Length: 323
Ligand SMILES: [Zn+2]
Figure (tube, rainbow, N blue to C red):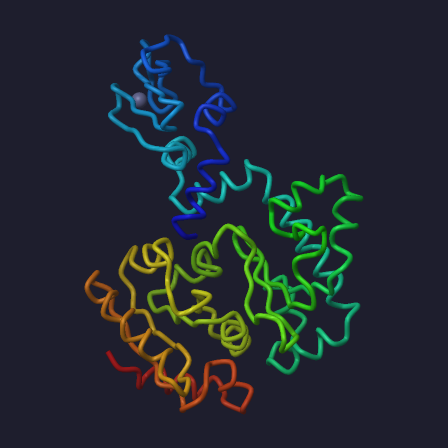
């Protein structure tokens, strides 16, 4: 999730609203509209928790902790940053909406043979994989009706980016992959932009909760790369949705000690390999071993497997990966 998306999230959730929803009571007013109250983060007997509703910041004179609404959610729920962000999204109410949309798209997938044919052509062939990645299809022109019938107001759909300002479904003719707190849409049409996200940023690494338990992790650019590797039995794979990692993704890769295999595209203009080089340098600086996987020229992991590559051959590429 990028900086801008985090700022938007914070703007949408005033700290005071969030605190009061979690049973915090302002006890004593201070100058400048600030309030003191009992600290919800430690055993507090006289008010030591200061809240500035204009700056959306808190500070506790008792336990010495302070920060913004995300920091508060981290401390209060005792979760990591990414989980705190996810909880706040949920609290804001976008999460249920995205969940409903994803569920609707999953039903559509089986009603549209062109979508199934596209997945087949991209190497996504087993129902178990479709199930595991919760892949769906957005035909366009029917999500709005479905969600409003379920009782979601149009402004909420618009705010989540599911419906355009003109009232049309935002995703048309796209394969849809649910992310942590977004939906990624891959266009089937050559005339539309290939990759789209809803507002709010791409979030952390794909399926990181699953991948992070491995001492060696394979990082790929795209979800179709992820899909074929998963299918081939590499369950220690994760995806950054593009070659540029956001701060959260970088932070995730760098927590703990592990080896990261960078399996970016070997595209003609060398941009994937340049990105891998940059990332490997930045990981090394943070004490993480990074190895660059060299795919045959013009290939990404997805096309490698579609062209007949198998797990054994990919394993060999991993062994040959350079520092
Ligand atoms: Zn405190």
